[in-house]
Length: 299
Image: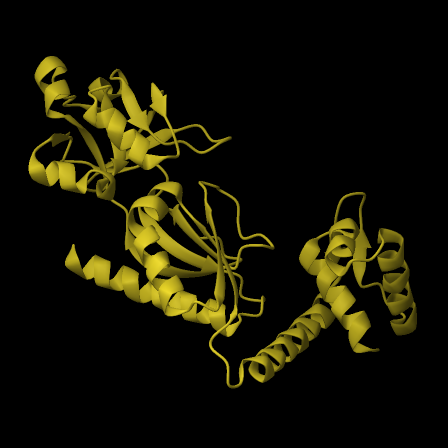
């Protein structure tokens, strides 16, 4: 068995189908299928089970994949060491951040990181997605209740939602004092495509859930803050969105007796356990963890 055949098997299983593996390897699908067949024939065992859309590793295929993945990671690490000798830190880091936390909190961190490491290509996606890591993303920051078992999850701290409105809105309409009143109030909040929006409200060990029908929805949190300040309704946003406005008294909060959550109560940094981490990615992970710890300590 040669290294190219082992690399091909790793890429096929990582990709989940032959077509995607072919694109990443810059080969035709037929060529990928041919080399896979040749590898299985030379070993005398079936390595993957094929369907019209996906390939799934057999038990033997999965064990061979694990060995192959380790070898590929070691080769990548060796190559990186040779390239980086005597040079400034280089490489590419793909990072996916939530639109709100990314815009309001993490932007300054990422700018500072880029200043510290100008040789690193930083590819930042601002998005609210419920799916896991993808090929172009090395690090994903997600607000979720529980991280998937298939990824490595590092805690970045808690997420605290507030129900809030401008002082002018509160004077004209009052603030909702119960979850039912909140449900019938013009709401300003974010959403995730393809997911019904529900608010979880915790009071001690008791949990209540309310389906939301916002009248102003956006993934752009500075815009949501503008809507709240304009008196368009009651905002349901993380506390960092209106921190300064609450401190100045321009924005008032309500339902403080509840711990509110829409997407989850915790922020995690996620990465895949079986993907080789370059020095650039490892440096970025450590940098973000340090920043999050320092921020959490101030709260």
